[in-house]
Amino acid sequence: MALRAMTPMMDRASDSFHQEPDPTLARDAFPGQLKLLEGLLQSDPGNPTLRRLLAEGFGGYSFLFLEDTEPDRARGTYLRGRDHALAALHGRLNTLAALTLGDLQSVLKDADTGDAPALFWAGYNWGGWINLSKDSPEAVAELPKVVAVMERVQALSPGFYYGGPELFLGSYHALRPRMLGGDPAKSKQHFDSALKASGGEFLLGKVLYAQYYAVATQDQELFKKLLNEVLESSPEMPDARLANAVAKLKAKKLLEKVNELF
Image (cartoon, rainbow, N blue to C red; front, side, top):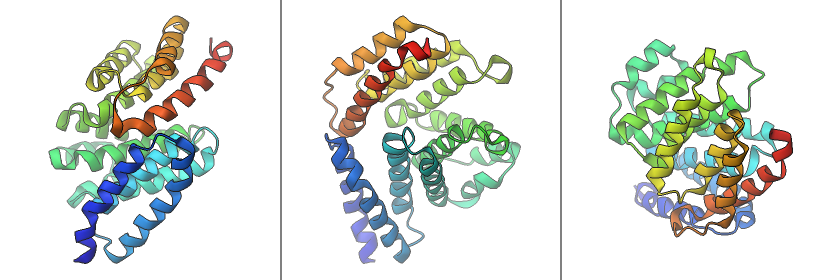
């Protein structure tokens, strides 16, 4: 009972990470926060809020701080995040990873708006793991499941997490060859919708737009335009302060690689 009473406080503590303007401080503090949450979870393993916070935390830590420099670690932390998110869901929804694509699509029909956050973080972490496991046919074969999850989140909660499902789907259609389901026109549509959802203030959206769509279509002008906008922007978006600070770091590194990418 005491732990359940503390859970809203942990939710607010998580918000402080999103509002942190110093990426180095956040990176150093993230592991301790995650282990604290896992310690609390041992006393209440059925707590869906703690599970969701862990899924969001592992996903954010993996994407913001690990996947560019420590991809092997990021693969493991993405999977931990996915499994926490699935455990936060009820009934057959928490078995999504073990289902065939057809069964997964059927079970997703039972999801409602309240399931959208856990579904999103399940798909986010799952997709991150697959993206870093491209040498594994078994991992890549699971990608259609993640697409189905993100499409369901988009249907349940349009614009969730600054257009997060749209950013995932935009990246997916940019990266996949046409014969395997890729579609540059759909990619652009998804990215534009994501930017509209955040008013262009969630800067990671522009980074992903440049990194995936602009590179896939070899549009160097758009690539530079988007990334320079990131570097020059100072959005008033407190709850995305950390993500926006990291976006600037990623934008700078991508611009330094322009001659390799085009």
